[in-house]
Amino acid sequence: MASSTAVPVGFHYETKYVVLSYLGLLSQEKPQEHPSASTQGTQQQLMAQHASEKEALEKIKIEIEEELKHLDEEILEAFTTTGFDCHTSPVFSPANPESSIEDCLAHLGEKVSQELKEHLHKALESLLSKPVTYQEYRERTQETAAHASGWNKVLVPLVLLQQFLMELTRRGQEPLSALVNFGVTYLEDYSADYIIQQGGWGTVFSLESEEEEYPSLIAEDSNDIYILTSDNSGQVSPPESPTVTTSWQSESLPVSLSASQSWHTESLPVSLGPESWVEPAAANPWSFWLLRATAAAAVLSCHFLRFPSPS
Image (cartoon, rainbow, N blue to C red; front, side):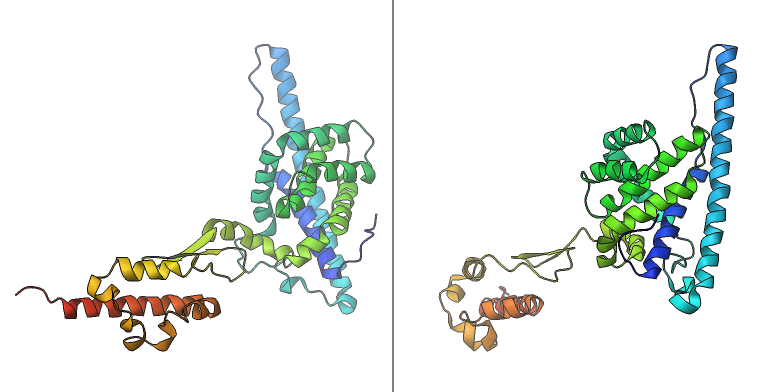
């Protein structure tokens, strides 16, 4: 089954690798633990089920390894025409050898599994009750993805596909090849634009660290707080109004200083005059912050010179 959306060949290879690698995470799972049974017959039944699940996981592992091998061969054979090199792709060759795209996706997928647990369960039950077709998978995935956004929305088809694969394998079916095509086709048709706009699949490596390290950055002085959000806007929220400056000038200084306005223009640079403070704030908020600090230092110097400590 081919995607109806034209995507860069490198993106296609990376998407197929992502689907295979994510499905391959199943082989790392342990068979489900079942409560201890009271009768010998039930115990034997549970042991047989446990062995069956273990066999199914091993089967998935072998099949995915074969699919990944075929993908490598396909990429290598097409190199002269596509120019795509796995060694230059962060998906195939991460900058940090200890990390992998599937491990990063596993963390995100676990979050999606918890947040959309009921919706995923409903979609899976519907898929298992009908013949295995791409149309059914697409419709159930779209219904579930409607409750997510951003990268979580991208993870929905992968999470659902993984659960679907496990259940079908337990039932003795061998759906891997078909399900891989389902996942690749869906992601290329409905998620490619978003993924490419975000910088490609390689962006996944930085998602977790960005959430943990940069939820917000706060820079403050003694009077104003500037909040730098993580939306990459690069904008700093300015003070609400010029009255903020007036208040710290007049309320925190001795009467002899606040009564006179001459220090605004005589002791400090012209740019700190009352008529021009808004302009530097709008042009360069950080420069304005430094000028404010300089002004405060100058005020304190005047204060100690005018009011020396008693000897």
